[in-house]
Length: 548
Image (cartoon, rainbow, N blue to C red):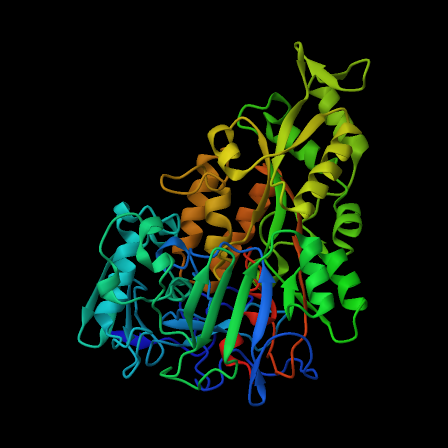
């Protein structure tokens, strides 16, 4: 079987390019793209020479640094590196990819089922051991091992085998998969660290060993300290030390960054704007994303039992009003999980806000308004409980706005703050205020789990109501296997059309992620189009190890 180099055009261009799609092979000494902002030094943190240390406040759980559990799976980590890494030359477009632990661009067979990746030589892990192809193989095998219980494993189901051939890693796939470079972002750890058992119990969670430009030197319940890795294979980090603190309350984080107690944080859009405006030394950073918010329907909700009823509930929602009131205008209305960043694979669809039409559909389906305005049919009230994460003020406010919109058409939605541990046992019985787009650097992983009928091994929050059809499942399977770019784009547009006609929820909008920071004199480079995950592993800090 002959192999050929992948062309230099990224697999992540807006057209979600197919068989000949490529990797950006630009200079490895300046990853992450150029440009960005700089500012005069001020604020907190110690310093070494002209390069100050940084302190940032986030909401992320500290002590869950195992890549097999998903840490840094999409590239947002300074501790680990994958075979490939993100490169952002245009913060408005999906990033390209370039070699990191790969010595050069992967090659792919003509049938798109065998990928070969030469492993970079002379790379050391944080424990001093040298990177080999066997470490890469061990990492992927650990991810795919059922005993690991990794919730990320379902996204790698195309991998049949992974093996080392000298200094090369060879992936054999079950089916053609042109988006496979997006699966090469997975952080690599030493083979010796994979001893079997659940990923959540691995020592890598609290003692991470990667090859990244920063290494963990201290971990406390609410504070992690990372320092420059002096034996890094590339250009050493200009940032000597990064301290990450966990501060769940957004008001406290805003106060800390205004006071200069921390150098940056993530905040909801309206609070971020107000915080940045309140202090001359602070900058507002706004990242484009594929991160959506929306609502799932309960599996057996009678008022959402047919495609027509589910469309009616979509027509009842004033998406732009939500964006303006809750997000301060920082969002784009959504009708499906696919945004315009996917270029030629994107179908421009929109549900007009039409509550009168929604009422008409409900009436025709036999849902008549009662004395209190809530509709009933065969003695059942139209409505359901809507769970939201009580720690997230944006989800809370969106849940309330959704309930108000649906009440206007006679459907009673009851928002209820619930932890994810409380939601999981009853997820089929309730609606859930969801966020998605956790793997956006492939259009397949952006839509497959969310739109496919529930799959074995996938987390419960993928299509929790279970709506869908065999026809849509078959279309999703066909699209992910397509190798012709034009055909593939057409299939994904068809996926969106079918979802629009028979929705499995209400997709509100794609968010913009907002951060407030003092760059402390650093050139931070471009922002990157972000996944659902956001916090101080993303925003201006997504490439912190490459700041100058």
